[in-house]
Amino acid sequence: MSETEKYENLEFKLIILGDSGVGKSCIMHNFIYKKFEKNKTQTIGVDFTAKTIKIKNQSIKLQIWDTAGQEKFRSIARNYYRGAIGIIIVYDITKVESFNHIITWLNDAKNYTRNESSVLIVGNKNDLENLRQVKFSEGQKFCDENNLLFIESSACTGNNIEQIFFNISEDVLNKIDNGIIDSNSVISSYAREMKKVQIEDKENNNEEDNKNNGCQYC
Ligand code: GTP
Image (cartoon, rainbow, N blue to C red; front, side, top):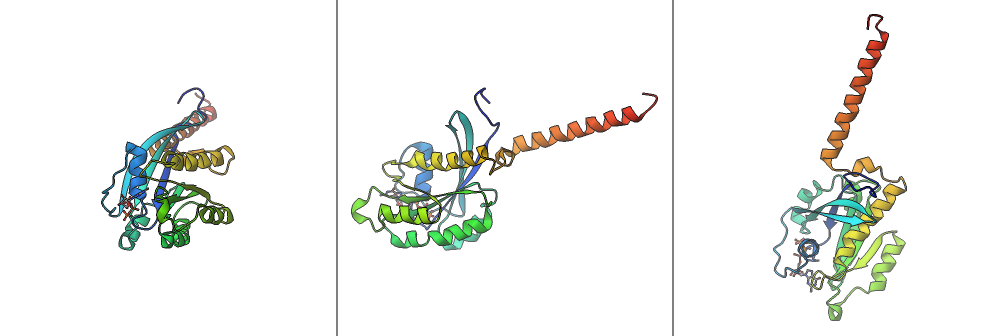
């Protein structure tokens, strides 16, 4: 941790949800490798990656889980929702039904993740303007009404891909700063274990001290 960092070992678990084919895997791939993989195979169950970013001088390790949009993999994918603090729900701006399904994905996420999680809705494929079925203003209105973050992107051109991950992480970070999320609940599992050991050690030492204080021969 550098001197200017407020928190140690922050690690945010993010999940990417949405209908099959909206571009979830391409978004994750573009964020990590900075390029578009046109022929990405369908995700089976879940895929995972990690990347460390910096926001306001604060290092945050992102644990990113890309889930399969296909119905048949949904129950497998749900096993990986637990502990997610950021939920990214993607629709395809050229497929209005994927926009109409956001509510289903939202309910699904709410049932299996933490109450304080941040939710970002992404209208992907905004490079395909001539095929657009969902207006930017419709996406924005839906998110304003439901108190959700909103952005449009293109995994093809790279438009707003970094912003997706920065915006949702910044929202989580603000919640930590405002005491809505306990920073100890979003640190790496290794750091959490180390903290537990330190607390146990301290308690054991206190017990020893107390014992010795009570003993007239020590
Ligand atoms: P599942 O794994 O089935 O859940 O699909 P997914 O949401 O992960 O979609 P994926 O990333 O595999 O992309 C589906 C198709 O959309 C692929 O043919 C991609 O090349 C294409 N695609 C993804 N993002 C974009 C985009 O921003 N613009 C354009 N033009 N095509 C995209």
